[in-house]
Length: 287
Length: 108
Image (cartoon, rainbow over all chains, first blue to last red; front, side, top):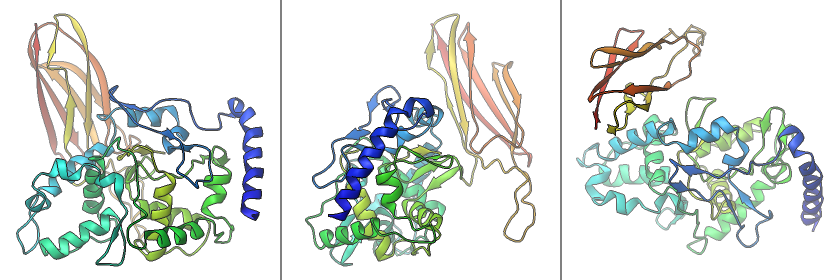
């Protein structure tokens, strides 16, 4: 109950601020994301049942015009370099089994359609949700007999980017009916609303209550993850989702959990669900 | 990105006298020479310092680049084409490496 009261108050604040938005360029832009003048990406959609916001909006709308333009041209988008690199890795033989990804997944293009839109997915063997990075590592160890990638290895980011890019434009949809996905979703929700760190912030403080406003010079988005891995201009490189999670938690001045830990996997399940229906943008371009 | 790899976009066909748009992008870290590593030592500068575009040996566009240019430099410019030929693109690295790419265009 307390939460819903706080929400309606926040909505009221957002309305008042909305009236001033033209004055200091707050709020999401009204632009449409059309890649290469051909493919329109769903960047504003109706929320799934039980979602606290009225509209689900991609982070693309919260960036400057120049940054938005970079993503709308697949040639200019520097993230496409990593898609190309990822495709090379997909076809490169590694490990003692003498296999590449393509050796097993012969019809790569067809096989990969939708994969990026439907992860994280329940993995019955592991008894936990798997994201694409974990799935790649499992394949590398079991099928290729290659070493698993270390977190944020350049090749891990490039291959993940390539795989997710094959679902560009397809709506994000997480299957919560499989295995214990609902329990992980619940845990993710709890984490999302838990205030942490010296600054005493939860994910919801910025991305639910105050999205569209500025935190110092940064324009807060809803924190949707449909564009990850994302090319960030700040790093001039691809940034993985768990890197971004850790960065956000670090910024609240809290101790941050390791990548692919149960906490961050639960958060990934929940946050991905919050962006249900948005088109996959990988590789998105952000500030 | 480990190996600099150029990407170029030139229309395959154009009409005589048409002004076409050429887009180029090369993967490169553009290390400015002003950053320090974990031990506090300067990371040596390594950037693409020159970019050049020629059409059948005739200079179309050339520029110098400086350390403030961000990673993966993107260049876009226009050229008027009167006859069929080949665009040649050249990037010169601080370490002396030269990266090249060529694109043919047919003028009808």
